[in-house]
Length: 344
Image 1 (cartoon, one colour):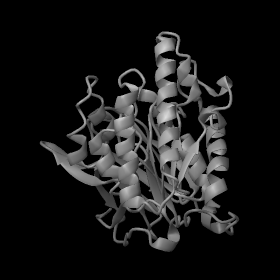
Image 2 (image 1 turned 135 degrees about the vertical axis):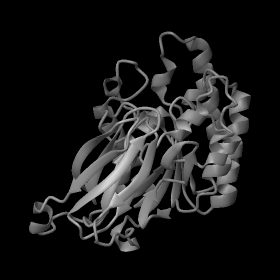
Image 3 (image 1 turned 120 degrees about the vertical axis):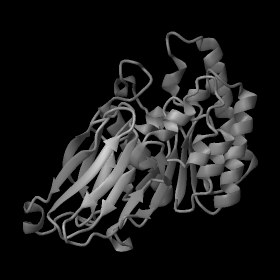
Image 4 (image 1 turned 180 degrees about the vertical axis):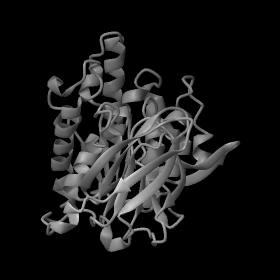
């Protein structure tokens, strides 16, 4: 999306709220978000509203830029890059418009380009929004210089869409990190990601399926599903939702690879859950995925064994559900190796 001569990447809609100035960055569009509160936990709309891994991208010759941002409900953070080169982390405080002054480090341009096959041109400013806050854009000041969105040859040539739980959202990959295991794999593949993962949600709702399968920019799709559904939906209910997700993906994007990660094995051993019941449900979910692919021979459907992604409990946080920051790195490396068999 182009607005104000900037590219808003992974942003489906810029929208407004009553009495709140600025444009809110919507990772999902409002139509989809307003259909997500069917679950008793009422978490779908909140999960979809986060600006996680949305980006503002632009190019200007101006060496000092002022960017005006705020946060809707809670404080947030951004990471700033010149292409792939990290510039810094900045706080975005809720309740006020923050003026973020971005300054070029001259060393970046005084040194000859040494990166081998970088994803982005270092001319591209990238403002990456971090986890669990909703960002608002208020404007940019480049004085009298021009600003423009990046052009095609300044960006990665390939894109994939990811839909998953808080694990794929990168919830525990570090407070100042945008390096979920999804982003680690993308960087090694030299892709960019449209990350539509939903922490505490990801229930394969019809509204989400209808939304993500209409996104044509993706060269392939990656689904990590089922983990958050284990205590809420029967195997038959999962089958109905999963089948609709897959059927719609194949109907609308049938010539593109679709990777599915089955339910992570670490979710079988949560101490406070009824493990007999949960394990049977997880096994049932996994069998549904296997059976779907068996019934539809298609070289574009690839089921990834989750045990090849999470290989050891030492990759986990103390909650025994989410990967640690180090775990996210290893998982990203493992996912890259699995996907590269089909993509490279």
